[in-house]
Image 1: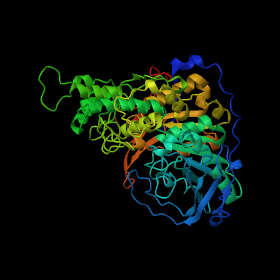
Image 2: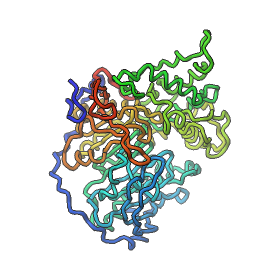
Image 3: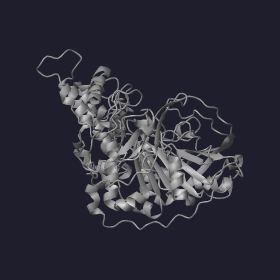
Image 4: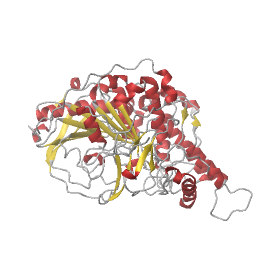
Length: 580
């Protein structure tokens, strides 16, 4: 029987179809030692860190060493509004250290970083942040996303820096708006994942100098492209991280962007959907699937089971009133986005197919849905102008795909991605996929050292589909076994939430990770997900963030804006297959 989301649920048997491959599970990590929180620690030096040089021998990958450009006491920052509600609480005064990791190749750009050091309340831990989009922004620098809140934490929870964490991150090793770095192999390796290690090791040296010792624990948190980086951190550098939070990770980096470019082709070929057409699709989704969770609220909470019946909107031979149907080209565009596709080339770790976005609901949502990410508000051009290749008002992920094709695969500044044929570039795509894609299911080294991974992926994410995470976790289970996976990984799906933690998808993942890593407390089966206003933190709604593949079912009574009115219903029949 299902239980209320505030109480532990019995463990569901997940991914039953992939258990046959569980022959070699990693050894169980040693039992956790009772954690005793040390007293808050004051910084020993700040301004004198300026000019400090970290030798290349202190960094675990080849570099030219690192240097501190500035170190200063930054004043408290008063709350202010931004598009994602990242700075609605005060940011405390702290020591701000900024610098760069120098390359080996003088033609490669440096890795710029920012480290925020608590002045008087260091808790002994550090939290590294992944970037977003195509990188190029020092993510923890003043005014940037992770200088305050880290996704997916609720907007009203004190920031990690406020809680006593050292926070740090980088620009990925290149500047925003630049594409010339893609011609440099060291810069591309940095962007793929090497900057994570280089920034981490540099931060450890700075923390040692500032406090006289290194952290007891280091965590990593990232959303979107930063979620991909979070998984790469656990896969490639497991010895460096005690816990990882990956939110809406763009796992199959190259597969999804080639998939997106195919959608771009359909939109450019007459299949563009304006706001009215998108609403037709969204209304059809709501009419078909909204009530399947017991509540008509505009949320398709019973995710990954809503059929794609967009063909029913086709303007067929029979007369239909104007504005009530879609052209054949528009239907083809929707199918190109939703349906799985066998890819024309192979990717790392045996991936040959992309699962598609499926029917998510909230397609017409404001903020981060179809009008912003996969469709846009204007049809993409068949002939892309030379240069960066970004077209305003077009779907953001369409621009990302065009950029990666033009600048990282073909490496030609005027190459036109329209109807791109990947097959002549299969070797280069495989090379890049092996560098970037976070599809490696072998987390055995991370598991063996006691690492913990929390993956949060909202169900109506139309930039990085939930299907990617579901299939990835299925592959981890297939590789490590169910028991070993359960000891180190939790996968939660906030129903109806969008990319960038939109909707009811703010989850206090950092607190859960602390309890799991520091105190050995297994995370709950259904933690609280909230929708708090990104303008003023006002309460809008809460729901259980059910553990995959469970979904929140309305109990038929009670306030639908409260999580306690829902139960997490298990679906043992829903087994997402492993990546293929």
